[in-house]
Length: 229
Ligand SMILES: C[S@@+](CC[C@H](N)C(=O)[O-])C[C@H]1O[C@@H](n2cnc3c(N)ncnc32)[C@H](O)[C@@H]1O
Image (cartoon, rainbow, N blue to C red; front, side):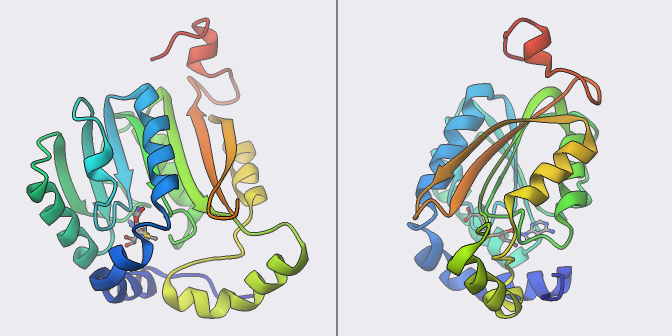
């Protein structure tokens, strides 16, 4: 089994990616970014983008939403700040260097937490998801878009074999859906709203969790008869 990711390795990896990130991952991840933004804007309000990277997604949000972005990597975030200035994104409240696992925000302050291509890049995905739930309002959503590892077959063997090298690049290619499903079941304060295959090749998924009003109960929207927050 490949070693776990640590914060230092991730920070070093993204310092190396920062100058070429948009060229390599701009277009290829675009459909997933746009789909997660569309999902987030159905709730709207104050949106936290975790692992905002170089800020490729920021200009695509409607200016009626308020955005806060955080990232572990200062070199990636510098590019996001330049993009916000270039596009005059007055709806961006702040972009800060911060660890997704230890968010410096009060409980329940965001309507939506979005993490695009991030959850398999953080050192402790489950603790990070716990933190997302903490900062989202009851009835709010957590929206992930990410590559998920194959359940079996050739792709799975390739992902297992590639995992040690991928750690140095800052990824976990073999991270499967069942890890997220088990986290949600254990946590008890979220429900899975959607899991949708995304291009390229359907190896990526858009996943939506609702924060429940209290652990192991119905989502607020369901309790309120389907009305949104
Ligand atoms: C694959 S990039 C995705 C960037 C951007 N969301 C996008 O769609 O292009 C992963 C990002 O997650 C950030 N990241 C990794 N671990 C993190 C952590 N513990 N806290 C905050 N950001 C983290 C990396 O610095 C990097 O910018």
